[in-house]
Image 1 (cartoon, rainbow, N blue to C red):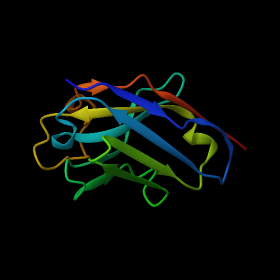
Image 2: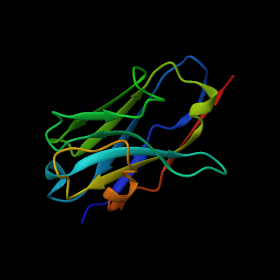
Image 3: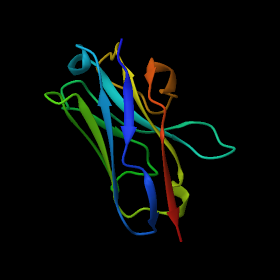
Length: 129
């Protein structure tokens, strides 16, 4: 198993940046694909970004492509989400998640939420206009 803890959320003005971090416990972190999701009030949890166990493959939702960057440091058991050019519609609780059974690719035409078995508690990001 793995336990995940997000940090780095906060209140920012539109156009600014935030960097979220997710610290993972457990011996097998480097073998898990990792993802970031978000959930706004009254909306379903949605996929934002994912990264393969090696970091060699990354995936992004269209809504954040070109603005957000996912990265990982397997030596430190951490994954990050650099968020630039933030918009008010990015306001949500952001969750880190782990996929222990990554098959080598994600088909983003389908929901990938259920590929991820372990979840953090979330960190609030609020973007003011």
